Image (cartoon, rainbow, N blue to C red):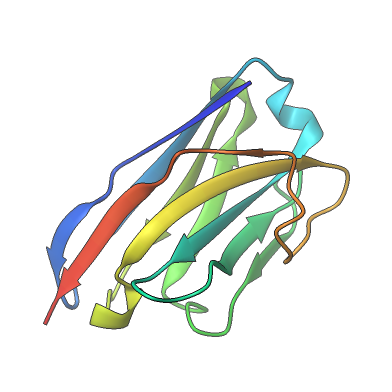
Length: 121
């Protein structure tokens, strides 16, 4: 199983980025997906989650209204559209998948290697 994130980079505050998570080696459509992040000196935290079929989405309060999670099961890919970025969004962003229902905890079955997002003020 492999999850590969891409799309991170350096952006000014107020800007946008779109992260992708390409999955292989599993039946992607059978897994709920989550995005997490770990900022400098911080614990890894939940950002957003989506059910296996894409019909339900969940967000941390800190990103609600600014970030949108989505998935394309035909392409085995998940996405995180990030708008109105703030310096406090600076972190390494990880995608993860788990069988069954969505979770806000770190109890996911597989994780990507992360992609770095830096938001300058």
